[in-house]
Length: 364
Image (cartoon, rainbow, N blue to C red):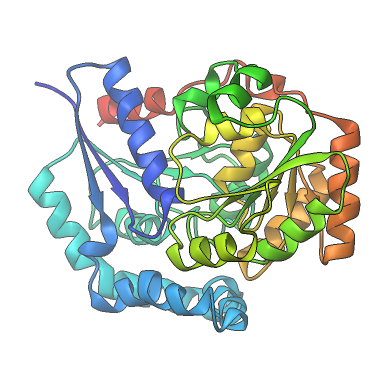
């Protein structure tokens, strides 16, 4: 009988769907007989959870950014955290349990923190008897990514292990793995070849400006600052799925040969191989991917909610620069261009995420 794996994602951006797809591919590669299903957890957790997790951010990210700070505090601060977890479980558990019953998996993997919290509570209260693996793709602010009751936590940064264990227990199984990012990042890529493929200038510096899948943050300001640096031959704006931003930036920089505006891309590995520095607003997987390609990263342009914690961790650990305003951004870009690409050796030899998922399924 083949192993059945249920992966729970969420339709709130590539930060969850991409790890779900890449993990599924790795599972099939390591055990061809495995049966893998990917489901949108928000689709079954009820309208209330769906609105708060997907509908509200569409407004908050663009118009009421301060509300993201408030929501993050309510979800993670000690006075309200337990209440938030209980409410999330109350509304989300029935749908998740029904989905699990329909799939009858041997192991459940959650790449979405909202689902992880519900599964962890169900697991430790005895309402769920199946092993649960949590995949964590953020560096910090992990109080809603890590959950007591989850059997195994997988992280993408070794620096995250300490924080996860502080949340779930000092002896909890926590492993840093590969397999939650596009497999292309594991294949060396020469900068000249990537630039040729993407039709970028062979000479001069290339600055990538990204607003994540949502296309948020001060991208226009970031482009304007990068253009003031004489050695920059091309600034590439990656607007994600924000069609409004795509049109706005194309109109703003029309006729400027040094600016190129792109929508959602499935070749981020190529862009980060080609670029000399990444200016990114939402942290998470894109900064990790930049590190995997040796492209120095700068966090700039949004900095709300969990990004405040990320930025503090970037500074503390020296993983990325953080710019609080446009003047600081220019200094950070110039520094990154002068220092050049970074070492990628820290990702060598990591075990696969799939190996831990399959082990959990086999252990029952």
